[in-house]
Image (cartoon, rainbow, N blue to C red; front, side):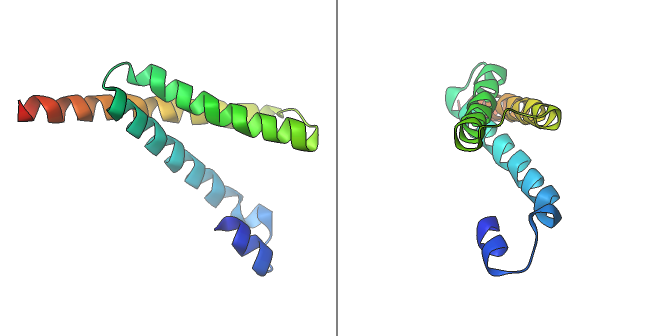
Length: 104
């Protein structure tokens, strides 16, 4: 969606930076939440793995496609992405566990 906005309008990437960052946080929290809810245990671990896989994919795309390593700012962002996914995993486990204990 964002790429279509950039392609067909005069909007510059810099003006959408915070929106893309917010969407990334929401997506990683949701991914951690879903993976933690499905696993039903060790939400911090499965959420962390979700965040690390996301960071690895972005890193490989950037390194192999553009021949650039992560900058210091990107390292901070991806550390926060991993932490957000961990929080989502923890919450997903707790909500899944509470729903199961209510139905039993």
